[in-house]
Figure (cartoon, rainbow, N blue to C red):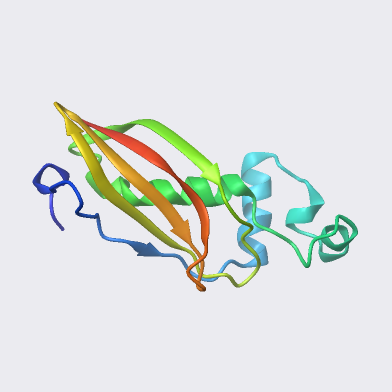
Length: 133
């Protein structure tokens, strides 16, 4: 694994492919976050809301995105995190997390981040600023 300070603009950290989204993932997340909206755990409620099935919490996807940077916490920390939700994540979706270095200003590394599903559709995008100690 390369140290973040060795990256050049345009290079990426190693992407992470999550396991297929499971109902138990979403039930656990609901308990941990306190977000018990039934569209995330109960098929009938999701359908009543006009959805084809239950959807993952947006914050579940966003939280997983931080996994891209956890191997580097000995070098610094995530200073800023700005995300825009672009699409829904459904049961059994396989999400791939990606981060590409956009800019280096002194000790701040600015990354373009995104999460894409198994069809290549972007479900989340944004920026992360990683501050080097």
